[in-house]
Length: 401
Picture (cartoon, rainbow, N blue to C red):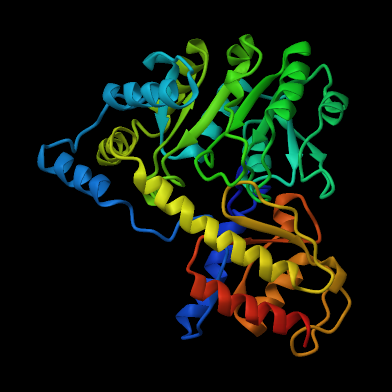
């Protein structure tokens, strides 16, 4: 008996899988065949979550914190988040303005679903994190992609932002430090964007998940600190995944006006009930405990960054702007399109480039096509120097075969 094809929803039919997760899956499949793969796909620190955080999770389990919590997170964690922003950014938030979710991606989904809908436009500077466009479309809104250039350091200018605004514009999705480029904005650059947002009454979602992984002389500025009242139109997205090596614990948060936070909490109560109770107590220990572990990891990323930049810039025909934060190198490989690579393969786009590189050199990168930047690739240096060294050797050999 032939079963009829299932009639899936239009939203899911058009949805593509996460490119970073798909690239990692291809690398994992090759590893499963016994092949040694030099994997630079996932934006995930390779460090084990610090011991005091793991100990706190164990203690939470022993204490019986294994049941439902409030849908938006335990009050102790909300207070700790507020205290951290007061300490680090001199920003004052109340716990009822904080919503704890199952990772920053879930936080962004909550925001877009609660704030945006059909007829609304969301401005996204490109290159952009792979899930931004898809999450906007799932909310029924329209993504408006605004390209940035390598010459600008992949930063959105105030003029380009203003030109993209229409009567339908609801939100700007801004990520600094940025995935995939590592680009950071100066305080002056952020203020110029804030003035445009204020002038046109546009909300700003400031994705600050990489804020503690910074390599510039200028300190990090949270968007909500700008121009006095801009906090009223700013939604901060962050979490513990990157700074504390807690990607698998799935704890992120939003900080927003109370009315919006309440709406997102109602949504989350129907979606997931609550974030993982054990993970919340682990995140509490991360925020309230010693912070030297964060600096130790940042220093190691600094060493890996310097090595990676040196190796990539030594490749003929490739330029690489300084990534001011995060742990990515984002570079243009289009000068090699149409030329024989590896075993004589010729490619015409970055997706085929990444496929050939993986199959022939066993080096896994993520295509820039997924980030709205054709011709580019992303390399995550959140891995050991030994892996970086061998992977860069293989990349160079593949390019110059």
